Length: 138
Image (tube, rainbow, N blue to C red; front, side, top):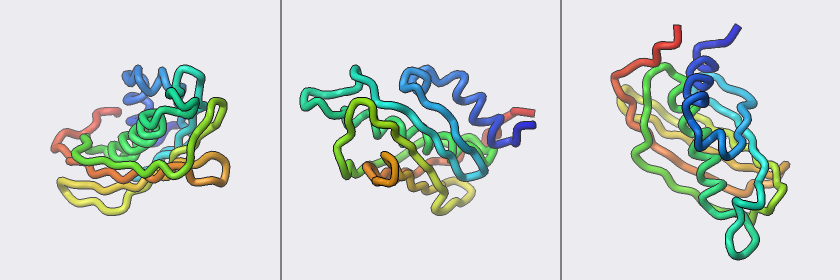
């Protein structure tokens, strides 16, 4: 039986064609937490033959969205940033882990770490506005 956070993320993922295009797989979801993975494909590379910065950003952004909405209250991004720490290559399997840092009635702050194996390749920070709407997932 799925938990409420798992139901919310499943509903989000079903409608998220961009995350589907990235090939994202959900590994774990709890309230305020999401862990997802993807593999870098050739069409995700830039002119330097490394992953376009938007790829690791997008992976982290998806983890951020899933974690921030997992509380049951709908949340939308209002500020994000990423540090690209190491280059990422075709075939790399990336894992993004999003964790709540702080939360209030209207704002939430999250940190997302993007790893290739044990190596940190990206560090993403994000703030969401927490709307008054709740997820209706039964």
